[in-house]
Length: 594
Image 1 (cartoon, rainbow, N blue to C red):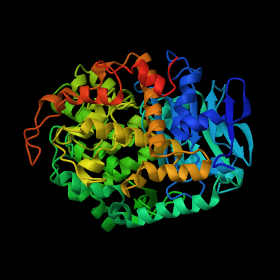
Image 2 (cartoon, rainbow, N blue to C red):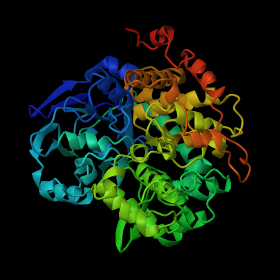
Image 3 (spheres, helix red, strand yellow):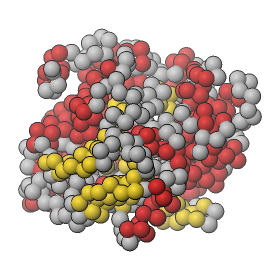
Image 4 (tube, one colour):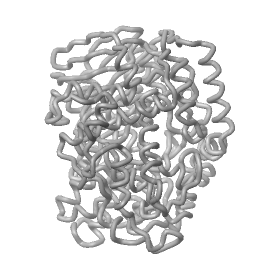
């Protein structure tokens, strides 16, 4: 017994077949699970030139060895595929309860290939797997699909992962939803499911997952609990206000991107903050499986309970669009969840449209501050109606079509999140070098540059940021692989802490250096795949605005993001050459040489 269900399910939708295979020991050792397993399998099984929406594309839904076995915050699952938004090898994670249920249903991962002739769903139940007709659910929203499948299966405790209309219509910013409100949000992976005619995966089970070293596992788990309980962020701010606790903090640091990154301070940020949510829309906490923080926010809007918005989503529809109406923002967020849209990309795309309209580059009247418009356009994107059809493929394609791709605040065509890198040199580096594009969670440099965890770094200084950025990227990749939540790193837990739990659970002897090496290996697998898509050094950068237009307010005033020497130092830190290509020695060290 080693923390795994020890079964990978291979599903060929073209043939209509499901096949169980044992989990290879070498994959456990070198990639652990979750994101690691996913990127390895997609990289190995899918020729890189295959279109993301072709039936030959490969998608993996994977858990880690610590998913669902009682580890604090051990609830994560990963959805991995080639991104239809930007062709990167993209891993997008989510929490709640689906990952736990899939694992106790007897499956560590599901590998999906082919395309069904009609809408289907994959039924996982107590170590059994079957493809079933989903025609009745095609065209339905996430909530309709989730509740309908639970009713049809006669079990409200069945967990459902599914897509909404946006995924069916192959929006390149469509996400994969689970437990109604939790999104594997980035990269447009919902469109991959839609292209395969796969509406949902349901999971139910009661398999007992054991651990290799029970006593050591108890000790390591208890130590983890103590750290989370003692951490000022994990036990206080995050627990009290959820991720929305960041709104006022980031705004008061003058790094809250506003009006499509034209400024970085929003005068009315307080109106859309976590504190305001607590006074108005909050109903209760909504923790994931095994979570002792409970950052999820159960909210009530228009008489209906839902979840969120999270900080990133509230910012995207709020400050970035110049909107200070929390109710309208919540409505747009709820539409994203129900239609299956990435709320970050949706909000940023609307902000891009607002600037295009402001500058007269499009005829449509889409104004900053128009609260009703963000709701209207979100629905139009989800159903590909009117101008929403163009916007449903993200801000880069939309801005490029109208002659001004520079107004898309994206990296590698993926929309940037809620931190202005002109005031955060390390975060900017993480954005620019991200293996799935403009992303914050794969290398959360906000932790040291703003929160001071594990130590406070000057956000305006470049020195040492390459080392820190690589470390955060590698650690995050490893956390994604083991199935824990990144918020454990805010406790803060370090590589040695994760290694102790992994060793006790799996029996794979591993120290902190081993954990970091797994993360490094995962990062390089994704990097190599992306290089085959044509990505080079020129793509490791930020939008021109962030390189040339200085901020004008607060402490970061006068600053831009400084690409060099940061980028060169980062490449050297990774063991890549001056063009950002992994060296033969680096690949040999990671066991990736061919």
